[in-house]
Length: 478
Image 1 (cartoon, helix red, strand yellow):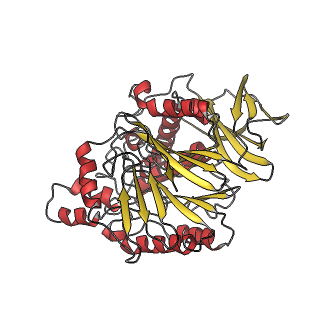
Image 2 (cartoon, one colour):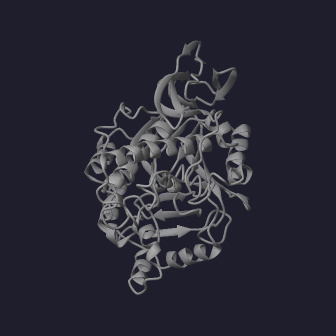
Image 3 (tube, rainbow, N blue to C red):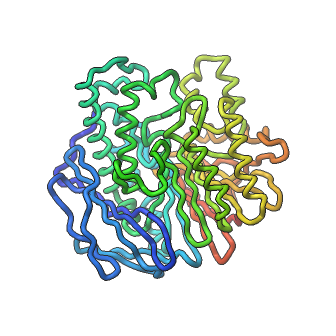
């Protein structure tokens, strides 16, 4: 179904984006979207006014950005268009961090009832009202853009029917139609209840996954991703990701972005670094990260400046069961071909075994020094679970929270993964992986919508999951 036209009054924001920290100050961007021609007023913060900067226009909408700092106060604030927003901007002591992923569904997402769709967002906003969050991490699939391909004839048959040699006029028309569709979808979702309340008050740090582009981007068969249609689709998705999730001008990338071939981010806070490698920009069927992505990630780890705790955002789970068993079953039947791309997306795929081992070795090289503990955060699977990798001193923990808006899959799928997990896995023989039930739960995988809470008290960290039906789990020391 083609994207519907935006209402004339469609707007969104402010949405806060974390830009960095230095002693005494937290640097932020505030994104707002307004109908074309409706310029927002100045933002007031820390005793001064900040004018809006135009980032991009598409689909009758204009994205604007404000760059400003807030002092390290327990409850700082800014004001925009007559409303004051409080922000828990003191990052120097105890911390509360939220982690979410999979904000949507493949089909009919915009047409869902907002109260049903954003029920967990509203619960997270209520949680912030009781005990403020300092940071919100988005682990991938912040939008489900699969239906965006219906916006133009060039991509309407994606990925099975892609024109081989479109002319220039067709490419230009597709580019503008897709840009408009992405802008409309982001704006509509950013205006929904729960998210809008939270995003205006809690700075976000995000990394994308496939649905922010299209289902299975980079793992699709053949050369569809490198086709002219594929590159137009990717270009529109990339611009929208930079504008809406990074509050960055597409032609002026954030500091440290290099040549832009990969969009990985590192954010340094007092006593904490968040590493978010880009697992999509350079992905193809035989690799998860390309040369630029690996170079940046290894530079982060080899710089010698990592703090006591690192949160590693891996949009697909870094520690998981033996999915290669399912891939072998696929070779015996054509009935499961539609799942091939989903399994190829995972670190655990047979196609990525060596690259997966490389990543695990990089993590262990830092973690086992005892100076820095690495905790992996992942989403993507629409389930919640916990995993560990054996390591000298203390295990590496992985926390999977997936499905802030995506409805949970059937319980039978959780049971299948549970059975696979019991086979065990050891891509590095001396460092076996184990998958665990959430605190207080029985099955390894929990099939409920969920989000994750992380807390730092002194030097100690702990985590808990909020589950849609079962409520809060116990706290897990990490």
